[in-house]
Amino acid sequence: MDNNKIRPKHLNLFKIHMPVTAMVSIAHRAAGILLVILIPVVIYLLQRSLQSAQAYDAVMQLLTQPLAKILLVIAVWGGSHHFFAGMRFLLIDIDIGILKSSARRSAWLVHLLALVSALWLAAVLL
Amino acid sequence: MSKRLSSGLRAWVVQRFSAIYMAVFLLYIVISYMMRESTGFESWTAWVSNPINNVAVGLFFFALLLHAWVGCRDIVMDYVKPFSLRMLKLVALATILLAMGLWVLLVLLKAVNY
Image (tube, rainbow over all chains, first blue to last red; front, side):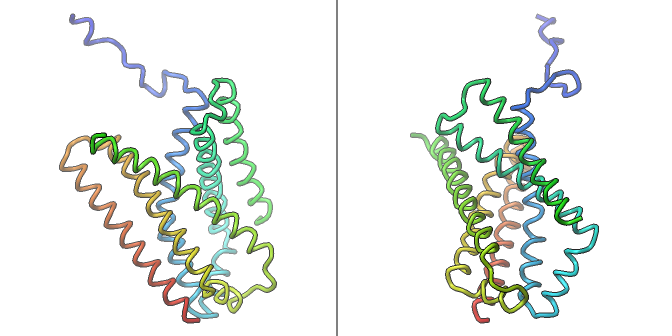
């Protein structure tokens, strides 16, 4: 009975190897948190851009700053990952890609498409 | 169906329908952006003050905040176990999301008058 108390819980992230499908799920959640934090930033920029021609120009100017460009690339990485992972979950809901092999393939595809989106934006902006 | 089960199902449905609306909206934004005839402050305010666009943007933020509510609620319920602390975080979250909703509503209503 006492042995039961020292059974290892295999939830130590440094000891278990997570499958790519789990990584997509966790990244989907992490990206979601990032996007929620960005909501007030987006509303603020929307408000400023509509206030006056000067404020509009100031917002456009702000978006050309190197730091803003880096943040934009990170935001698009998170946003596109959340988008593609969400699309994958919607397809899985209607029984598309539910086999282990195809679920793993689509999980890799989500990571790839998100990375490509971010790199594409980086190439356009920088 | 128990209340608990139906509320979980409702959250599931809200999450999917808001996601689909936002995906369609994003497609519309990309098409609008590619088909724009001019750039700058005037054409931007003209686009936002167009009633269809104005309502579409408003619905987007409504879907976004609902989607954020379901997602954040799931995270709070996964990691915050003590009841009072969980309620406190959920109330704070709902307040913040509602405030952002009112804020963007005011911004969009003001933009209609351009």
